[in-house]
Image 1: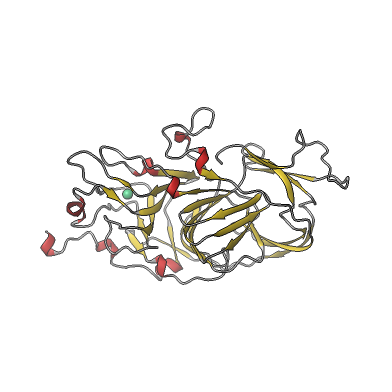
Image 2: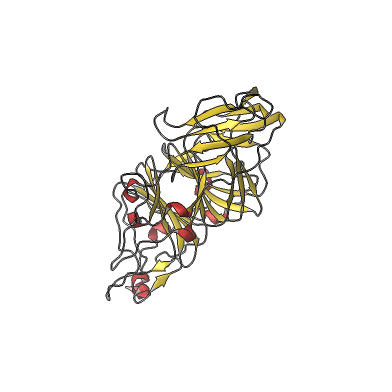
Length: 388
Ligand SMILES: [Fe+2]
């Protein structure tokens, strides 16, 4: 949630009579988070959003997760997973815990239904493709290298223009801009790697006044249902507030670089309960005359690190391909593979694009990830005899 937005027609005060041209009242809806205690938006519908015709169970395919046992660093060639369908039906969980589920999806088809989650915000990372996300608050166009934040409870429908490959982080709470980037009034500080202007909210669209049978799939952990409602969900004439979907493209990210290697928190983009998100984008390397451009060996002793490799040359990693995911786990050091440090010396810049999430609770591995695991990855730090 970057800042306050308003769009369309609104009454001069909240919670007062606001009438359509035909004299009927608009239906006001408060979309509030964390009870009434956190961000919210007020929506004005042509028709009541509560007009539910039917509710049926939604039996979703069960994801089977197993522990990272034996505990070790892992590489999953997730880019090779074949998936098809729409943005929701094509989702395949890769890693997860109680705080977050990391999925890959490829939206080939438009969603013929609407969807919303009741568990937590969703953070999409668009690897390739373009399209739009229709919501009652307007339409959000997306393109490659977009992060898209869709708050809990926002009804949406993703319509790809091109096949859209994406990483989906299903979180268990709000996805937020870290406090360290904000001043006391919430505005992004001069030191932040992005600015309010870099975020795109939904574009206004004409409200759709249609009566019929509209399907909304509602998802939560073990709380799923298919609703049929009597009015088109995108019938909002105006809204305002702090709770809305928005996008941010990595091209707009201004990475923080330094004389010496900057640790991942310098590249942080968002945070969510039990999770911190970072993005590594094309940037200049460190400028100390003896700087080592690739990262040092690293033991992340109490969190799991999940890197998703998007594009460019992943200099510090051997055997990695586009769409790969590495899990660098608590309990095992990781770092540049043999020879990578020497190869990096004197390099001035990188063109790599990768996104990362660190989780503070152990991640479990889904079946789809097991099926594409590079089983020898944990041995990739052992030098060949010629390199010793
Ligand atoms: Fe690390």
